[in-house]
Length: 225
Image (cartoon, rainbow, N blue to C red):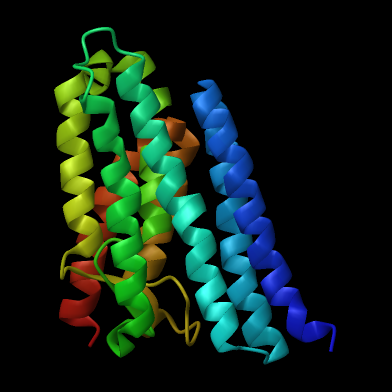
């Protein structure tokens, strides 16, 4: 009776942490938001891992996971975009609200995921955690690359990311059915390249990692199937 609630408890921890992250984002402490998102990512990974390990998968767990993700990987990056635009004195009054396109398209993306049997092992469209990991890097990148904080550059990013969330681009999942090199070669290379990039560039590596994710996903589906 207890073990069947463990994955859902971890999912609730994801949701709770995401809510706290939203508070920090509204307070304007945008760099701290990254740590809450990383914690959400850990919880998001381990709820599914615990469900498989304990063999307690359930329909309510799947729905709860998506509801938590709407906050942690939908609303939270949307608020971050809202705050980035709001902090720029040259931003038209209406533009910050465009940041909330991210939670709208994230919700659509998660709804599609829940009813699409083709996404049981891989993704169609950019998954919400990867999108959010990219967004949380922006406050750090703006410190060295001021053009990223320009209102209309941020608007373009919002529109591009919103499109990618609901696009038909096929991307691999990092959940492995086996550890064999042959079946997962491009996933392993992606992980190695990502780790090396992060070790040298820290948050500046995140846009590179996102590009690598798209590139190695296409290589994986072209040569590994």
